[in-house]
Length: 96
Length: 488
Image 1 (cartoon, rainbow over the protein chains, first blue to last red):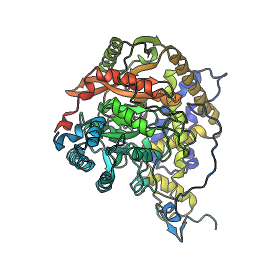
Image 2: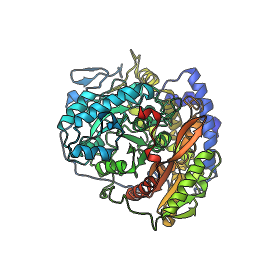
Image 3: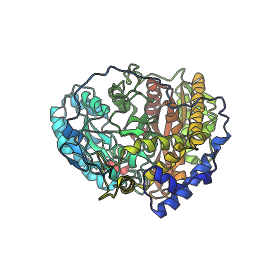
Image 4: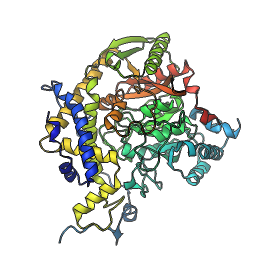
């Protein structure tokens, strides 16, 4: 297991695109260090011959016919948009 | 029966009266409305209620259907077209669902009427409903205590007779634990048994929708209507859905019930232990055979759960970016500022904490050490259950290690809150089914607080756990006990 002190909440918040206040950063740093320390017990389990389980019920590729059906109109799809115009989502400027 | 007492009825009894036309669906909604208006100021179980929409549906209701005319409260993370779906979060404060979840379509096809969206921990992250961005729900048995969570609104509403039944979601215990703390029945179906389409995702490999009800029969009725394959959810299972009420009333002769030694851990409230031990004796007297067994990786459940659930949550909650729906920060100076502030302003503390932990365990350099290792231990937990179910038909334990705790008691210590799920979250990791059934009371500082028994069954063996839970329930009086607030 990695060392619990490796966690840098400030850096991870940038990866998560989630601004945190200084106060939140230092509180999470302490609280999550506790959680990671608790979870350190996973390091005691011998998993050398175990396959990782992504699901409780083993599932593999699931296919179905690709049948078109009625779904949202543009108006419905835009009904919760924080900012829209001309039947389009208006987004924050991405390119200069 | 006077209209005033209607809300005390079970779903089965209510539906029988509706079918015989002794009451009308409209009368049912009106009497429930009066009940909700009376009790809601005390328990705060609902986030929104659209009585007019429900009355319109009531006037069209076909009472000959299995749930014809029965109103059901819906956790506010399940989409009902035209209604809010806040997920208990400010980031979806003004969101209105443009579509129905499959479970809503199915319940409507069986005649049920969705009525009211219930309070919850934000994005279902919590065990007390205190993480809701909007209000604090209270336990009807003691208003100074939590109803449990995250489906605390549905549990409190059912316990206070402010709903005939409710839907919740269970990712690590979020149906069973509040059901236990509020003294009602709650079911976590096997993974894939119920469609997740239209349920806002928290941890996609763990989430399931299930009922909270006054009796086991009511849960069986709702599951019969709701379960089954859905082309919109590729993880839903195509196995046929039995009539879950069919096994009810069968005795327990020949049924083997497993009692895992790992569930006798320190820190269980002694009154919870003695109630559960008495329940085990009761089940034995009903003909069940008790088998002592071992689930050796139980102790790792919480750690595995918090790596896997937060990893999946950090990915699922990336969709809340202020572009297509939900809150958007004002006047962002660039895209990073847009994302960073939108999410800072929209999410509450527990959600932020879990996004950080989940992002960390998935990040380069830590992925193998944390996430992949957790998935491997998850596999060992699954295998524990597979082996255990060779020796028994169902597994018995407490649902929660203790009765309802005080509001505010645990909010400062996330780890202590996480440990509330110690008996429930391995079922989600293993994909098996489970039910909470009331099994007694604990007396704490003068309050009488419900205790719950958990019965776990193997994947797709819901009919079996309904049979066992029903036999136990009918041999006791616990399910008839209601908090004082429900009688007034």
